[in-house]
Length: 75
Image 1 (cartoon, rainbow, N blue to C red):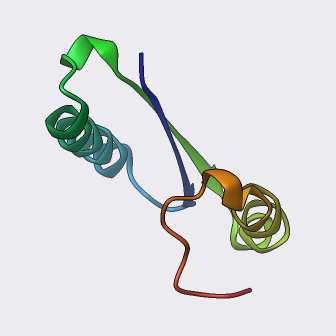
Image 2 (image 1 turned 180 degrees about the horizontal axis):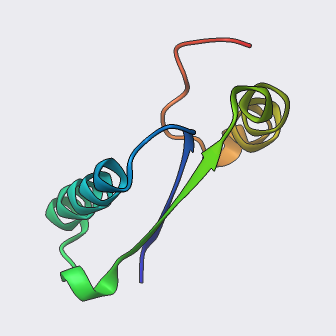
């Protein structure tokens, strides 16, 4: 069962997060052909400082082994 984890900068509304979750599931369903009930999605908010000091170095750059799309920015 696929679980999609999303990390975002704080400030997105609940409506935006719900819409993002719905759209991610729709896109994933087209590729891996599983029903809606198979998916779960979590969205975690981070401050700019947390992104710079925690997310970018530890969750992105140190995890290149599972990174399928690298960011187009550097910190």
